[in-house]
Amino acid sequence: MIPDTFIERLRDESDIETIISSYVALKRRGRTAVGLCPFHSEKTPSFTVYPDSQSFYCFGCQKGGSVITFIQEIERLDFVEAIKLLAGRAGIPLPEEAADDGSSRRRARVLEINRTTAKFFHEKLISPEGQAAYNYLTGRGLTRKTIRSFGLGYAPDNWDSLKKHLQDAGFAEDEMLSAGVLTKGRSGRAYDQFRGRVIFPILDLRGSVVAFGGRAMEDGKGPKYINSSDTPVFKKSHGLYALNFAKAAKEDMLLLAEGYMDVISLHQAGFTCAVATLGTALTQEQARLISRYTGRVALAYDSDGAGQNAARKALGLFSGLDISVSVLDLGGAKDPDEYIKKFGPIRFRNLIEGGKSAFEFEVERLQKKHDLDTPDGKTAFLNEFCALMADISGEIAREVYISQIARQLDVSKDRLAATTAAIRKKKIGAHARKQAHNLRTFVQDNPETLGGRPSARRGTDLSGLAAQRGLVALLLQNPDYFGEIRSKLTENDFTDPDLGAIYRAVHTLLEQNRTPDLALCGSQLTPQQMGIASGLVASGRDIKYYREQADEFIAAIHKQKEQKGPDEVGNMSPRQLQEYINTRRAIK
Image (cartoon, rainbow, N blue to C red):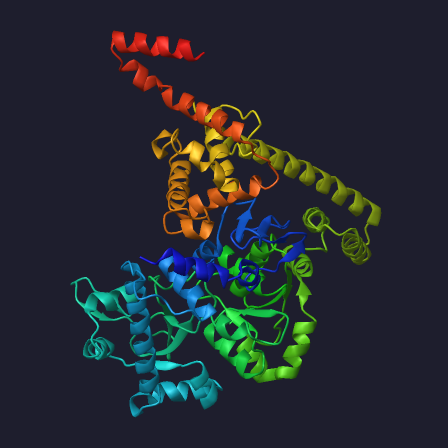
């Protein structure tokens, strides 16, 4: 178990605002710092960092906690792994008694297998056995330096060469299966996942090999690409290829391409801000990841129909984020790799500067979709165009686009503007109604305004639930009240298990004469419970609690506990039922 003294030192040397600002663009607002939440899509910042309490809380998705919790959530690590990452970043040696709960050992073992596998594949590529694969890569225009920089490799075209190599290195078969470098056939026999393919190692932000992509050197010989499945160290929907390089690029943007070869060619040509998805279409998690590193992204997708459809879907994912998106027109080439080979880096640079905005891309798509030479086609286009313009928040931008289309199609600018305004008004009204509904639901389900009168929900006595929240918030703010509370209340008095767990964690620290710091509670609480605790700290910052309130909260908590549910009352004997009725009357 990691000692609390070590966690306290780590917390003191891992300033939460500094750590989080390396992932999220923060702006100071008095004693706090705010930014767009990295855990859910939003346009208005609701993610708040509190340097004075070394905590964070998002009022949108209710995630929160200490700097350790943040690293757990953002890097998808367990508590011990997050401790290790922060300790390495702070240059603090881990204590000898630091716990390793099995999952950490499995992750470390998978990373060792991946590192050994990547080295094996690269050595095979530069050996006589990999000559055909090496010729394939150089034939695609890659230099030896680029091949080495990206650690490219070759998987021999047989069933067990990697398996034997890893066994000789001391790895067990079940470990190789867990790492995804082996797979099982119908007979149950395990064999190499990658065979006869060029290999692209996939690295995380810390430079560790977490997965592999394998490309066939001949079209028609099996799937064009085979990618690692999800493992203890890799989730394909969350990462981006070459982000470990691109995050250090001098450009103030990211180039998003579709494939490994596109990215490598772009880097070799000097566009070191290029990244790609990992064998899947862009996901919401990847879009949010991009928005954490830049405010501008250019889509360098293939020029065919599939590539343009993928670009349109990507625009939809970026639309909810505070990021500028443009789409490159790769006319004359099928992909960025071919474009650079045909036209050179200078022209590609000009292509980036002249990229189409998201709305220009959509307008052009609509123009291609409809026959503008016919009345029906023109009407259908204008209806969709006005709906598209209604989503643009800037009045000047709307006027520019509407004026341009009105001139092109010889239609009334005023009529287009009026139609757009009507659609926009309807959308804004619908959005406001939805927001109001969500707010009512949130307040009912989260009675955080502790003095309020929350509505009843699913038979729960919310006055008692509010009292539980209030008691924990009071104790976090005024730990000196603990002496008067501990004799009157136990964890078992809480009907909400999460609040009970938080009370237990705080109670344990206070019994040891320790400060109820969120970082010290992290090993005892789940991320969800840490979010609740952080929310109580955040919501209680502007509330002044008094000792008398502690007794009021405790009385309400006991009252709720004494109430029986319908099933419990139905199972009572006549004598038990009468005693319960008498007790309830006495309380009232």
